[in-house]
Length: 318
Image (cartoon, rainbow, N blue to C red; front, side, top):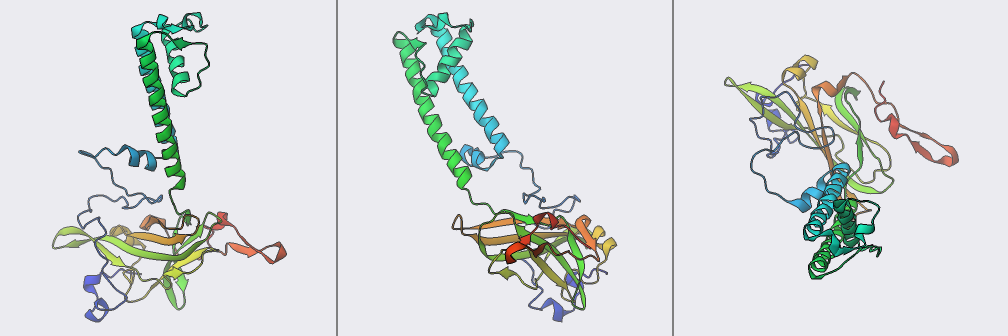
């Protein structure tokens, strides 16, 4: 197949209700200096922000990965206790009654673990402050602990309650036979057992072309044979038929590589668990296309008249 750009289409096709220029996607037309994708397979944007940025600790802690989140919590926990341990050592470890009898034998370590006990309100009683200054520091230590655990509780709740679609995408998209011609297809399934209803799909093709000696990035809507399903109990094969009004019409593998084609996908639906609208997105590049293939069926009859959906077969093609 050979690709035909929109500007080369007849006026009758350019005015077709199926061929619509998308609204501004936020990427602009100047991103042409790289062969990398716009959207990563995990749905994140392939953008690194540098320079001046606003510091929003709450949003950052809610949005970062779990491993990084626990590393930040551990660093904060250690730093706070170390700070109070230094204060206890500066006023004199003798103001912590019982610390000198500790088996640790190192004043900073004794003060650190006393701070841990105070911060967490454990209070074993073996060590306790004596004197006004040490009691004031211990009181502030306890107050910081109460506030810290209140904030941590809120962060954990926000992270666990954050609605997120668990949509499984096929790793490859296909140029597959469809009716009397060809189509662009990919497959999705719900990784969870919950209900996602009124699921909608949207797909846009992005490519780079030469215009007046300048490279520009173009976008075009890819109308789908079915862009919405009411229920999502099985997999959904999303199909764009390659007809004369398609941005893929008459384009072959070599041409797709030349223009660095990428297909941007947005899935949106209503999650009954969270009672909120959730979304998931990813993209397929020309490298991830399998030509002249079909998807194999990934659901099979099971015992008791039930249907078995095997998510491990989402990439099975023939």
